[in-house]
Every structure is written in C-alpha cells, then in structure tokens.
Image (tube, rainbow, N blue to C red; front, side, top):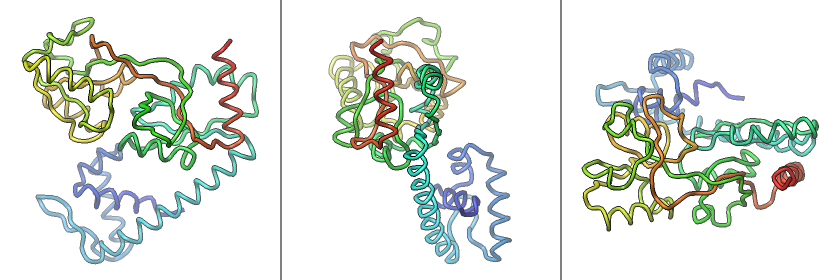
Length: 295
C-alpha cells in the first residue's frame, strides 16, 4: 500500500547508518544504499546527507520522513484491520513471530489442530524484538497471539497466558570460548568472566539472577545488554567475547554462539500469550489447544 523503499528510508533515518539499517532489515548495506539512490532519483530530491560519521536528513528528507512515517502507520493499521476481519470471518489465527518469540513453539500442536479442525488457518506476522511490553501491547492488534517465554510481571494486565511448559536459563557464548565444551555451567565456572544480562527493570526473574550474582559472586563482572534482546545483542556478545544470559528456546539465534544450560534454580514459563479480549476465532482456537493439552 506504500512504496517499500519508504520503510527502508525511515529505518536509515532512525538508525543514522546504512550498516545499522541493513542489520535491522536483514539485507546488505549495498542493497540499502542502492534503494536510497533510486528513491532520491525517483523523487528528484536529495533526502540524505552522507558523511563518514553517519547519515543525516536534508530539509526535504525531514519532510518526507514525517509523511512516510504517517503513510506506513496508516497502511499497516489498514492491513491490520483487514486481517482482523479475515480472522473473524474465516477463523484465521494471526501468530506473531520474531527471533525471541518463534512460532515454531506452536507447530507441534498445529499438526493436530489442522487435521481435526481444517477451518482454522495460521497467518504468520513477523515483528521486531524491541521490548517485552511492546510485544504484549500489540497482541490483539497486529496479531492474535504469540508463543514464547512469559514474564507475568512484565505482562501486567496487557494479556493472558496459556502455559505449554517451562524454559530453563542458559548461557550463550562463542564456540571458541573456554567454557563452550561443557555440558552445563555453574556460577563459579564464570569467575573471571563478564556476564551480560538484560538491564534491570525489564524482567523480575533476570533481576533476581543479577542480584544473586552481584551479592554472592563478586568475581563475576556484570555487563548490561545495550538494549532489549534482539539479534544485535547476540552479535555484541559474540564480538566482545561476553557470556550472555539466555533461554534454551533461543538456541539457534546466532550461528557462532553455543547455548549451554546454566545451573541456577530458576526457570520461566513459556506458552501462548493472547489478548485479554480475544476474538471469537482465537477464543475457540485456545479452547482446542487446552483440550489437546489435557488429553
């Protein structure tokens, strides 16, 4: 409903860098630059000032940026409304998916559901990992449900939860790290290492693990993740030879890292996270899942 290059332009403007925009969009920086050149030629205006220190917007670029943000948001909302209408009429379940909330958690159940209830369809909706609150707030709007770990303190009254199991905490590190061959890692194994953890305030369980280590094991350095977990955090961990606190459901996010069980007395539930007011099709779908889990 809008030129896709506008979304790339907005990402470049937000990131201030072709390279960072490319990492965010999972395409090459060369492709990003080519699209921006084509966009400027098409419009007939210079939108970007390219410098060795980064990308800046021209006055024309600032104007286009403002309107592009509006067009993208308006278009996405229109598409969301269309998906919601389809979900009601055809019982299409929109499943949000990202690196941290992969829809593969639902696939084992989907095989049974699709055979017995062919009226249901799945529509996979990708989204970016920004923070847990954003993922939860978009449930019922951009997608009907997501599957993954669930932090009730972060969820608050934004959504509800159908538990499928528990995830244990693990540690991700470079395949070349001295601890990478161990079957499991204890807290004392980390003495002399730097452990990267999500910044305080994002997850009470993560905060408790941080507190336990800071109070009882000063031999371990704690580093804050630069922002909420996404692929960039896993890249940062690998580049700096840090050890990252993670979960066993995130084993395959980065090909250069290995994930090893962490010997701490904590786990976090995972399952289906859905709206406090699910539509009729989603409610029926959840009833079917509950029935399967009970059998």
